[in-house]
Image (tube, rainbow, N blue to C red; front, side):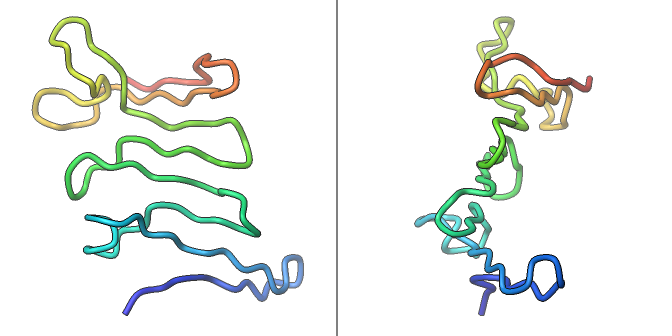
Length: 106
């Protein structure tokens, strides 16, 4: 059994339903959340490396992206944010409409 939606009862947002989505394949099999929608609009989308490592999150209502994905020219790795042991080494928060970084953490 897994959650498929949440209905908020807070007085400011009474009756707001947020649908939990699970992509087919691994996300569906292990009941891992792939994203959330409200009234057909994406609130967020998650992308994973393997079974457990979240490597990218896109926030649907704002042009903001949290990512570990990028190309490292030193070793041609597609996950710039992870070191060779799989630990977070570099985290970027980007404005997707202009592709400019909003902040980074090293």
